[in-house]
Image 1 (cartoon, rainbow, N blue to C red):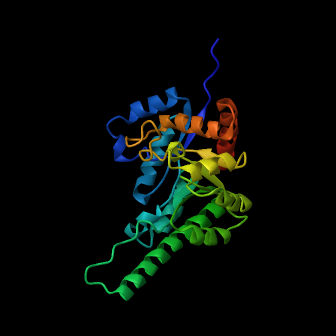
Image 2: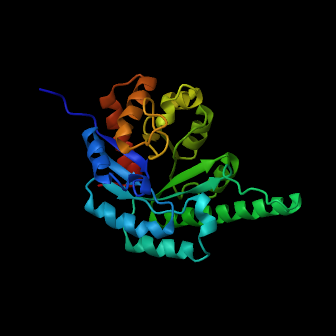
Image 3: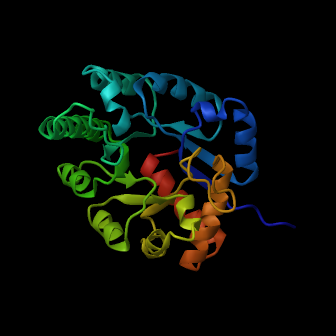
Length: 276
């Protein structure tokens, strides 16, 4: 008799992106065949959230989150946050996000723009991201939902804002690429991290050390598909089935069986996203 396959949750997908339009049903089939029984469809733009919520109601094991990605805040008007809250009262979402701060994708300096004007524009741009981030954290606090955090090149500012909500929200730093010391910082604040296919890359020693060091119950697994396909699929489109590859790498780094890792991470997922 064969043993049951370990179950996994891909806690961060963008299955609603056009990258999957041609074969979305087949992608879901491959995921389930690989033991990926639950998938989170992560919100990034207000205009896509209602459709995602309607879609996941029709697909077993799929759940949606609601949020405005920091790289998209410039495209949203001042009424977007009120619309987001109204939608969250109408639809069921598993978490708020992804939201946060992204200082990597900075707007470029215009050809005839002075340095002072550019610095001022960047400050305004960062301030808008921070305002949207705080608003979504506050919404999560009032709704009793976890928060999926996007942080890129903005560690200190992201933590400073999160500290304002200590004890009010619980967050997961998705696609975590930081150090074991940063894992400890987040742990001390009650937050989690999530590991992607980056953990399979040869040049990812820091991520691998963090995956080995994270305390049980303080981390989850994800693909961030269609991005960051793990080895041996690096450079190709990523999909939720690759969660099993990420899991195998994390289990090896932690010196534990796949079955033990599955039991541990599935319990963490159920608790964080408040799944039935």
